[in-house]
Amino acid sequence: MLPSIIAIDGPAASGKSTIGALLAEKLGYVYFDTGVMYRVVTCVALQRDISIADERAVTQLAEQTKIDFLPPAINDGRQFTILADGRDITWDIRSRAVDGNVSPVSAYAGVRRAMSAQQRRIGLQGRVVMVGRDIGTVVLPEADLKIYLDATEHERAQRRFLERVARGEQVEFDAVLRDIKRRDEIDSSRSVAPLKQADDAIYLDSTGVDISHVLERVMDIIEERASRPFHNLQSEIINLK
Ligand code: DC
Image (cartoon, rainbow, N blue to C red; front, side, top):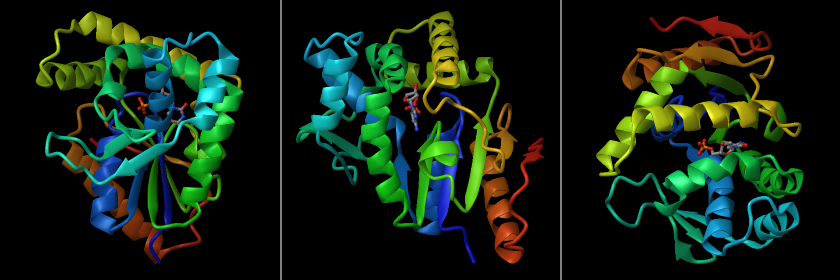
């Protein structure tokens, strides 16, 4: 039997969303990128001039903002259309300002409570690939397959840098690398649901490996697991090179 709930966790720009979306498409599953939810709260807070340091106000915003994921309405490279209270903010949530403020927002316990509850409800419906930082550890510890996708800081910064250049933004590589390091530090050291590999997750390092190869390897793992369903509870490190 194929795993029904698949969790992919890992640091910023490790390739989780690309792999997650391709995998979901291949399996005919729902793809759910949980980072989007934290980005929406951060984006709306910035747009409304709510101080990111004001935990109460930001938490209230997380509890009240209606977030919708829709199929991509416009053909501009988006994976889906994202609405906050009915407003399309698909690209706004990818801005440098959001990148720079999303980690502190996602460290607030009340924000996480509001977001995790919704994520868990969606995940438990099954046939889902859910991508984030704490899916295998906190949101869906019962996931049938957990992948922890990693890559070196330098490689991840390079990927983010190229994405931004492709979008026509003026950016410097060193600034992107600094942002990535700062986010990793906050995401891994926060007290609530820090970024961490689950004990039973498979570790994949995608440094220097192209996406199609990573996807192939994940499909191999899924097929192998489907043929021996009870071999499941140990962490494994898979070398992709
Ligand atoms: O994956 P991303 O870069 O879009 O995530 C944005 C931020 O949201 C990231 O800095 C950490 C946070 N996040 C989280 O804390 N838990 C998740 N499940 C997903 C993302």
